[in-house]
Image (cartoon, rainbow, N blue to C red; front, side, top):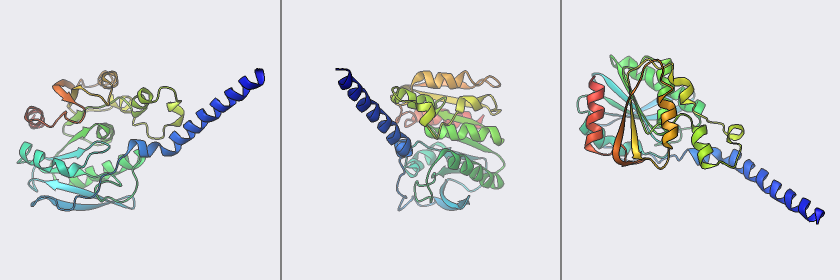
Length: 258
């Protein structure tokens, strides 16, 4: 009986270690879902190939070439080219730069936290040379990129849509039975950085967010001790529909106008 118990325990332990190994080896394929290149962006959209650390990022500029600019960092499976009509409608007088992460939308390379943060600075510096001031929107995964950027560059205004305190927290919620802290490579520790943000900040939460636990968003919010953000809940929305309505777009435009 003891031998059988030891054998069963060893088998279960082996399965557990194997599952941990699988998650560690494949974690970035579970976090990043690259999108294909937009074959035919709308007329009037400028496609910019921006070099960053040996890779080429595909940036889509929407709207006028001059004036106060806006940079958008999207979600982990978001095709930013599909947002072109929304941004044209919401910000007709503002240049908007939609960022394709490495591996997304025709950008070269592979996504990782280090890569995305490095590229965010490259994009901001490029846009900052063209425009008098730059605001930033980060949605879902992109909220972690935006928070980091706001700690190393002077951002006019910051908007975080369906944000988290860290990807580590979100992953622990999805995989509570695994030692996520030990396995996870890309943690995007936004809460640890929030107190170093000096920009006026708007945080928009989805009422029925099925991806980011509300506790994770609230942990981020209370981490802004230096400058309290404006926080609003978008009624009747889910994670992916959070800002796909007129009311949200109007709120964004009003906030960015100051």
